[in-house]
Length: 144
Image 1 (cartoon, one colour):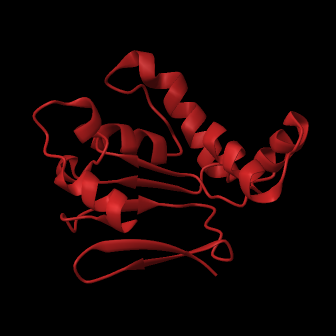
Image 2 (tube, rainbow, N blue to C red):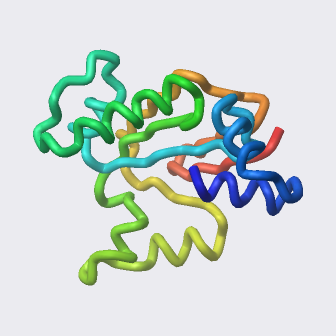
């Protein structure tokens, strides 16, 4: 959410911290926040309105906070993807290939190679962005 606040200022001029907080509270930031997970159990716990104790007990408060942010519109979309499509692993794990990450940076497009991703977006704002998924799994975000 902090990055969305930074981009808000870059694209729309300097704002006070109170103005950024108000935009965030009202889900009116111009850059939607999307969260991608490769942990299916954490995804299920966040998406479930009756959040139960996750397997890792220390995640309970984070899970409840993320669920609240989704329902309030602060986070627009929660998506579970296969671990093999997780780009960030190339930055943190030495044995993961970097080709997908380099392709995403070069083209501005994230290619999801596994078609079985699951999306949860309770407060979708179609006026902000349009999502296009090609038959090959290419995901493009565009301003409308």
